[in-house]
Length: 237
Image 1 (cartoon, rainbow, N blue to C red):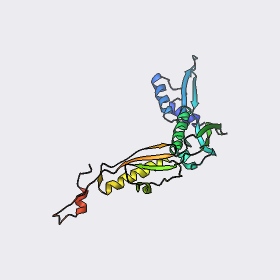
Image 2 (spheres, one colour):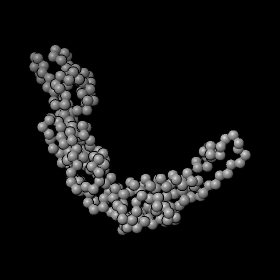
Image 3 (cartoon, rainbow, N blue to C red):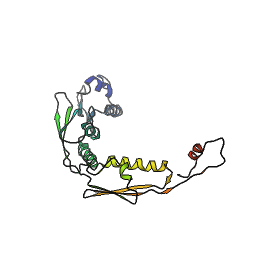
């Protein structure tokens, strides 16, 4: 049991000889639920000279360990961190399907579009403790056969870490595109657009428009440097 009998009785404010009223019962149950260890709590009383109180509780299960098993080409740490259900947390059985779908989507974004994921739940010897076994097959990856920069210079290819023959990792691609856009802004370009991009039959097409190159000339300044003045100019905003 996660909570000892005495602690539960203290939370409910139940002591032999004390009167019982509906307000006290509701407040006690609320305090017990705030511990985050119960799925359900109900209280019954008997119609006897000495009233007996029967407390029925259904405790939540806690996750002891999450194991990653199977044939997968992604880091084990990435899989565990991406999966919603974590070790030493209460298990929400109604969230398992959502957790699987989220993990499946993230694996697909990493270039493995058809992963197989199953979750096996096993009870441990300790009460209210379970282990989760993630059984994963990432499957065959999608690879980039050709990269086309539409509307922009070919040198953009050299700024992208992905190249022809690599796994189509959309997470890394998004990072690279954001870096390119940030660098163009630093170089004095305005209204730079990089993206969207498409991927079909191994061909990655990236739409790119560098925007306008803004040339700023500052004259007559002697006290404040040109660099500091340019920082204060609101043209980009």
